[in-house]
Every structure is written in C-alpha cells, then in structure tokens.
Length: 312
Ligand code: MLT
Image (cartoon, rainbow, N blue to C red; front, side, top):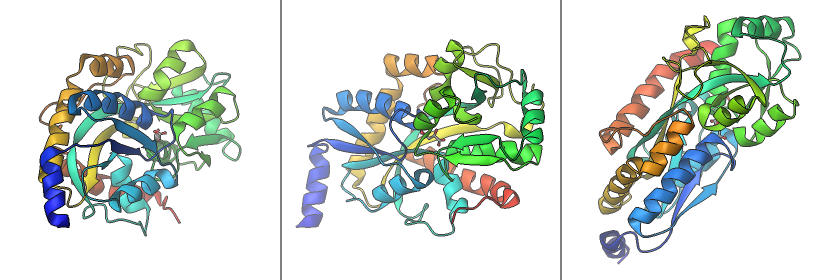
C-alpha cells in the first residue's frame, strides 16, 4: 500500500506544504537564498514551501535531518559548499553524503568577502594580515561552525597567512554579523548575500572579494587576487537535495519549479543586489548538482587535510 500511496502521491505532487530545511540560523546568507527561492517555487507549485532553520554543527545537523526524513518530496534541503567540505571535515557524520540524497539542482554561486568590525585599523588586506599576525592570540574570526562556508574561507585565510587565529563559531553568520557590527568579534569571511548591505552602509569594513572579477555592487572592493591572496578565490555554490528514494515525479517537479524560480525577475534582481546571480538552466539539474558535489568533495579533501582542521 505504501509503495502505491507514495507513487500515487507523487502523481498529484505536491498536495500539501513542503518543508525546506536550511541548515543554518535565520537571517544569514543561506537563509536569504532559501527564502527567495522558496517564495518563488511556492507560487509555481501552488503549495507553500516553509523554510525551517535547523542550525548547528556547521550545517551537518540540518543535512542529517533531511537524510533521515520521509522520502516523499515533502522535506527538501537547501545547502551549499559545506555539503562537500563536511564530507572530509567530519570523521563521523549522521549521514552518507553521496548515498543518502537525491538531487534537484544548483541554485547560485555566491562570492565571499573578507570583512572586519568597522573600527579595525587596517586599511587594506595586507594591513589586515599584518595585524592578524601581530595579534594572533587575540584576533577573533567568526564562522558558522566547522563545515560552514565561513569556516572554509577562514581556514583558507589562516592557511594563507600561516597563522592560526581564535575562531568563534555561531549557528549561522546572521547571528555572527550581529557581533561583528557590535565589535564583539574582529574578522569574518562571509557571503555577499549577507555582507553587501553592511559594506555599502559602512557598518563593517571590507578588504577583498573572493570572486575572479570585482562585483558591480561593490566596485571599490579588490578581488583576493588583486590583493595578493589568490588561493582565497572560492565561490559558495548552493544546491537543493531530497532524501534518497524520493519519487522521480516529485524530484522532476521540484527541478522544473527551481528552474522557474531562477528565471523569476524578482529572484534575479535580489540576487544581483546581493552580489550573485541564479544558476543557469543547465546547472539547475540533478546531474549538474551531483557532478558539482562529487567534484568539490575531491577538490577540497586535500586542502582540508593539509590544513588539518577536522571536527570532533
Ligand atoms: C556559512 O558560513 O556557511 C553561512 O554563511 C552560514 C549561514 O548561512 O548562516
């Protein structure tokens, strides 16, 4: 009967609201991307996609929640590069990254910015590096836990300057930004989806962007390459996943709806204001996301092993 109901349900899918798990706290970059996409997909599907923030353990708690959820298309995960880095960072995960999920598609690839509290003395990236080296026992670097994009970027920064700094983990870089604005934490590497408005408003200081080219919305911000730290070039790609075994009719409808959302003028406009853009039609596919995840696990594994920054 269950097989029948699952396939029957998928035929009329979706018949009720869908939960989109965001594995970080509300108000951060992942949440921002998720809510924009969820709102547009809801309209297209005719069913509400409700975002549920499940923070903790650098995104692996939320990913684990979805890995264990009913494979019926009513629980989906929006996650980013951390899905790949966590596969190496965590020696024991509550899920198997490559076996416990099916794929919907890629969503967007967001640049990161190296930022600091607004009264940080350094006026350029070299000055920030000198300051960090000279104060390594007290300079604090915020991140969203081991496995977060901010963790990866912070790790690249510390590896590049060959200086370990004091890291302060949060459930997301939404809450971390509150402390950066208040001066309670010194430095952060965070996605433009969370930092663009603050940089433009002068409430935090920015030193570089990790994209290959400068951003239209942050024209004065040099790239890490221009600023002399090319190894910090990294893009935070985001994808939508479902539990393994979700009926094909459901995943196909989700992929189709994701493509519609990525063509939504409002989504594209908001992404542009935040320094990013929607993934292309050919990237918003299960095959593209699967290839990206597998390729990125392989790419970051040696970098993480060299940095030796494991969880637990
Ligand atoms: C990250 O660092 O992975 C994200 O910024 C976390 C978040 O979305 O809060």
